[in-house]
Image (cartoon, rainbow, N blue to C red; front, side, top):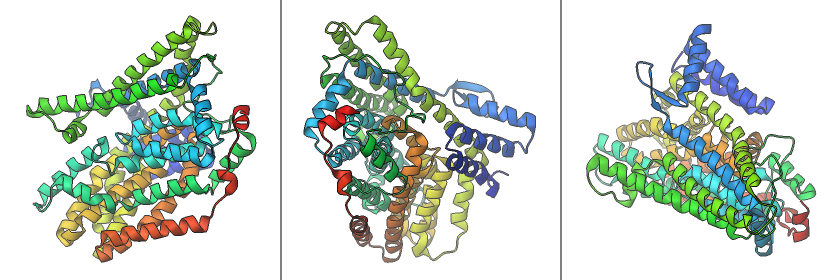
Length: 540
């Protein structure tokens, strides 16, 4: 059953159940069981063994002999990072930093459009890694958007739709370094010497049409108050009632209990832990990358090589520990200032911070399980094979690869996995048919994988964007999909033109024109962009 159409059933079951039941863990569990049944030919005992191997594989790496080996440090570090971030958030709230920052921002960011633009700009600026982007931007932007009654679903969309799109076109990022390394292998395999892997990546940036469509839609939505689909429901509720999320739903990353808050908190009580987190993470990424490169080659690493060899997960934990240390120091300062803050509040901050991140960790564990099982079933390989077997005219290759990469990332929940499978196949097809389409074909794969990742409820980036924004996960998925699909339609038109004309700038120009038409057709909603007074914001 591996590598056949049956391999599509587990992700389809999980995604359909998510849409129908709105229960993430139940839906992922159904997909996991379906995948295990297929892998073991419906053997009850074999299925139970496969489920155990899948679950334990989240924490342990297994060798080819099936014996457990080393700890799966990537997954463990990501979970530790989430837990530490939850504790940092709790201490920032207890120290009064979140409230002080919200009041400070309210005086300077006067409109809902301004709050959304600040979030979008932060998402563009923090381009080192999508995990880090999703969680760090949420911590900074949430007090501003909450005060301006921007729904958490909208915040999650703004975070998610600026995280991966910026990372995938930035050479100085964990994504960029990985992609450049893959491109280098493709060029060497096909003896292409007219450009280096780095110059090829730079030339592909304007060809990544979904990125520019997605970012364009983000800024149009922020500026013009464009809301449609389920997003309109969430935004209307936030404006009319001040409830930025449905309190009856599970909200990962949201503190469950009201914590005592110091009245002496300042903006610095929020800003300094976040700055320490950013600096600590970036410095750690450079250090781990430089060490790994030196261990492998014996030479000093360049900046690009540092990001190519970096250990993202370990760096996130180190950066989080630096941010936590600063948050604790500021907490201790508040102990000396306020009689409401003491040792019991320190313990409360630890426990509530950890508890706030547990829902996100549960979802991540299930998502990692189903992604691993789907990989064993060969879902991605099956979809990639469909591309190789197609006999469409070569001009259709970019848009075909874009759509297949989108379906693959949507089904498997991983854009990086889609890169690893489809980029070499795209390179092979282009090199043997029309080498002038090599870079457009590779760019289309990158763009399609980001699109599929945006729509997939089992994507870890989607999960972390929900967590960073404090949004219900399914609310985030259902509200983002219409915007992502709109961007994909615009990008598809551009890829058709790119495939048949070979002109990058003509295709990018078409994307810009279609974005302008989108802005005009959707119009402007003055109510969504209106000023929310300080009194209204504080009422909530």
